[in-house]
Structure formats: C-alpha cells, structure tokens
Image (cartoon, rainbow, N blue to C red; front, side):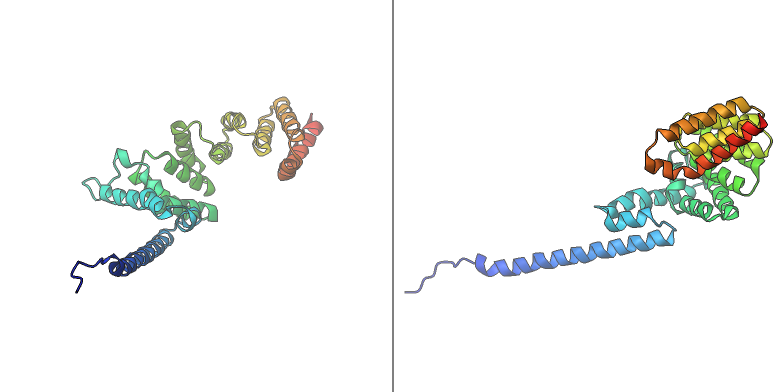
Amino acid sequence: GLDLRPQRRHSLSRAPRSFVIALLYRFAGLGMVALKVAMLVDALRHGLRGVWLTVIIFAPFGEVIYLFMVLLPRRRERLAQSGPTGRVDGGNQLLAFRGGDFQRGRELLDEGDHAGAVEVFEALIERAPDDARVHMGLGQALVGLGRHEEAVPYLEEFLARDPDTSDHIVRVALADALVALERGDEAVDVLGDLVTRSKHPEHRYQLARQLHAQGRDPEAREELERLFDGVERATPDRQAEVAEWVRLARALSEELEVGG
C-alpha cells in the first residue's frame, strides 16, 4: 500500500536556507565595503589624511572608531553651533579640534602657511575659546608670522591649561617669541623648565645659547657640559641622531672659551 506518513522536509529546505544565508553574507560584505569607501571619501573631503585613513582601512572596526571619534562629534558640534548662541557649549569644547578644522590648521602649519593657519585657528577660538590646543595652534601660527606680541598670550594660556604637556615645541615657540620681544630672562625661565622635561640636546643647547645672550656665561658652560655628558652616555645610534646639535654646542663652547 501507499505510505501516507508525512515525509521529512529538512533535506529539501536546507539548500534554500543555505543560499539565503550566503546571500545575506554577501550583501553584508558589500555593505561594509561601501561603508568603508564612504568614510574614506568623508575623511579626504575634510582633510583628514594619514592616521585616519590608516585607521579606516587597516584597524579592526576602523569604521566604528571613525564613527564615534569623528562623525558623531562633528554632528554634535554642528548641532551646538545651530543653537541660539552659535557657539560650542562647555561640554563640547574638545570637539573643535577633533574634526577637520583643527587638522587642517595643523596641516597649514606644517606646510608653512602661517597666514592660512591663523585664519583657521582664529575661527576655531571663537567657537571653542576654552580649548587649550586651539590656543597652542594660534600661538604657533602667530610666531611663524613674526607677530610675537600677539602670540605670547596664547602660548602662555595653553601652558597654563596644560602645564605638563609633552609637546615641547610650544615652549620653544614661546621662548623664541620672548627673545624677539627682548624678554630674554623670561625666555631662559621657559627653556629652563623645558630641559627638566626633555632630554633632547637641542633644548639644552637653546638654553645655553640664551644664557650666553644674557651674559650668563658660567651657567651656559654648565648647560653645555651637561649636554656633552648626556650625549657621551647615549647609544651610537642616538649620538648619530643628535650629531648636528652637538656640533652647534661645540661651536658655542668654543665661542664661550674665546670670550671667557
């Protein structure tokens, strides 16, 4: 007789189910590729090159990192600016330099376009006056234009807000501005603070040179001796890296001996 019992259908449904799963995986993969491309285009359009391009392309979950570190903060910044005051509120101060504007200002500084950098940072400081790094960028750009008197308050403001910064170029820029304004004793103080934080021979050489300019030759000689001692204890590779600063230090040492 005929077997009227229900037949098992798992063998017939397995193939269509596998096909659907594979299709979903395929679409998900294409979606992730499209998302990655969209974020790369966004990064390039906003001048975010280098690190962010590397994060998006190579970092695990790079798209998620870019979303939370760049896109969402940018969105919140725009919402804050669209409020009654048009300014970034206190809770969003750091957003000003996470987006493309701060990065663009830094790139202009690196390219030597100090006038362009001043325009960018002046606009940023209006939106986020409490962001220490915006003060730093504007101060450095003003030093590059020779506008030292204007630069000093911004650089001092940055150091007041972030006194333990490891960004030594700020103190060098401040010292240069003070020297240009014939405030050499203040420049010595800034450089003296710098050499307690940095072991690079460049900074101790700059301090020794400024001490010499202030007529404080014995102190300048002491700083040069510390420089030479530190380099002697360094590895050969490190000595090769700082050879130019050692050469300048030796020239200054000879000048002190002649004058002394």
